[in-house]
Length: 383
Length: 78
Image (cartoon, rainbow over all chains, first blue to last red; front, side, top):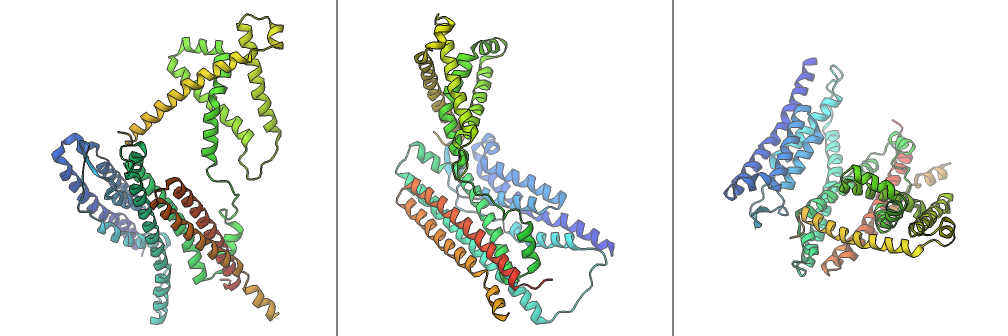
């Protein structure tokens, strides 16, 4: 009987190979479409890169007999077939008329799932055939369908929602032709990012819906009690959404000031010494990153990420730290301006520090605009 | 005793109703997000989408609690 186990282990590695049929078909059709434009266009086309990624994932699925790798290969194949991924040849998009759906791979996933379940639960000699009445079989099939049908409906509703939303976004931005927003809305990167977000959200929703539907159809005290007592995802602490973005923006707004105070005034000798040792670009990048990290810590301490604001000793300490930095910097500026230590401590040159910070802000906004522009170019958004 | 049992069997209903109300609200707000987008109000639409998905997540969480409560009340210990 142990030979059955070996047969299953072989089958679970052989059956995922059916996805290769689709990978090869889509790959060949992409290459034949692109080949007239030259070999360079073929090799750098995003569509072909996605197909290649799907092929790599399919190899993993065959070698390890893994269902996740198979699903990733299938999802990548479907992504490569999207109309949102035009075939670019020399800045001209060839409109794709026929979209081929990887039917073989989609049909294969059922076989792969059944085999995977069998491999997981099968023990030699642990099974014996049992006779069931037709009614029981019918009830089993019906309850399976009762779970599958709403989930398919949820997926379809999701797909419709995202298609409508993205379609309306495209429509809304066509009036803004040749402006950055138009390119952002129409770009490949945005499309892929939106699809990935949609898939992630859908997987979350499907996961919960399956659990809810199954428990309502087949209530089980043990499963519910275990989920209620051990389920870690039930014990959730509410965190306000988009806190990371808010903190990052706040830190971006304040870090030039911190950078000036620390590295252009107070620690100026250290900065000069480092610049004499290393390339100045590397030093400045490092110091910028360091001051950004420091500002992030300060902002987190002052703003706080809790729903209910709370007064903490840290908040006071951080505010006093920033004020002290400012004072020390002002004292140093007036000492550099020729004042004695006592004079400098009593009347620090605040205007001088503010002037320096202002210069940094101007430089910094110039760099920020340049950086954003090159980032948009890199992502294929800007012309 | 019988009355207590019947009362206990209904413990999941408040969760179920709250979850379904939130689900309906989230569907409404998500539909609004498409409508806003069609009127070229991009930021409003994205904000509505965020609100809608937050509501959807909340409703699924509460519905899951309802399912667990129903499972504990109606399920047989196996």
